[in-house]
Image 1: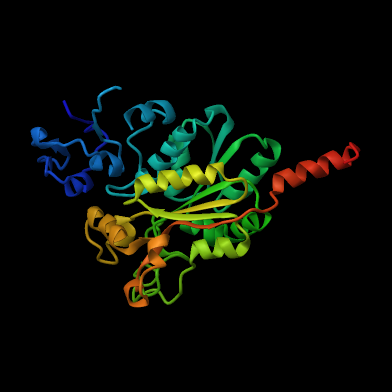
Image 2 (image 1 turned 30 degrees about the horizontal axis):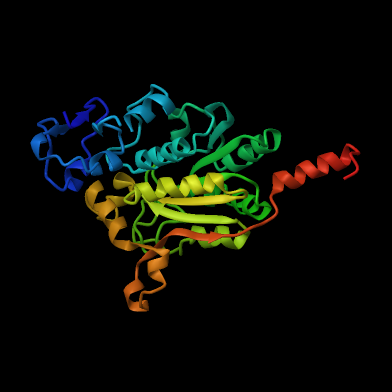
Length: 63
Length: 272
């Protein structure tokens, strides 16, 4: 799993969807975050960096 | 971020801020800066005033104080004088810091007291319904300025510099990593440190000024903020509507709490 979401915290602002360079993310039918194409994720962290609601996290390998 | 949430946040999320509000990004940057410096949670005080931004203190697991409107800096000054070894961080908004608490702000800068002040600048009074603040741009729309704002805004960083602050920096929520770095530098700085965080208010400011979605407001920050070093090399026509980010001013100066401790020593007759 590359991305972890916390849908309870998501308010559906769409910032992560807009800033994802690989178009991995979508909003679902109730306007909350959905990881639609996880295989395309390059773990750049743009979504996590600017999520104002702490609702999406990139799973990094523990060093 | 996930481990920082567990370590530094109280279990009160989701927060009350509107969808797309940048305050969450600024709060995360404050926490990242604190984590970078590995500050002792029991020796760090977060003080806030009133407004959307000032709700941040309630979510953070430190010694926190949610004070009267505009009075975050006086409360913080009190804490710093009594506990000089504590890191005191003030989280405040543009209206809170520059209108209601304007005098406190300039005089804390003049005294050069060792505080870190993070001003969440969303250009509007968001919580009360979008009235213009001293940082609303000239001709910007607000509920109290339906034909455009007549006032000219403060340049907060220049104001702080002029008032005597010894560390002045600015960043935006687009530049969230830079913002965290600048806050860390501000905490390390000995003296009055201001970090102006440009943040989006999509509901009260963006809607009235037709700035589009929260993501578009963050893109506006990306397109109009220029690193201060790059700005020096740009032509005047390229600079129209742009604002500088980065460390804008840094100086050495006599720090208030240190001086006050000396006075206490002298008064106690230690013969200094």
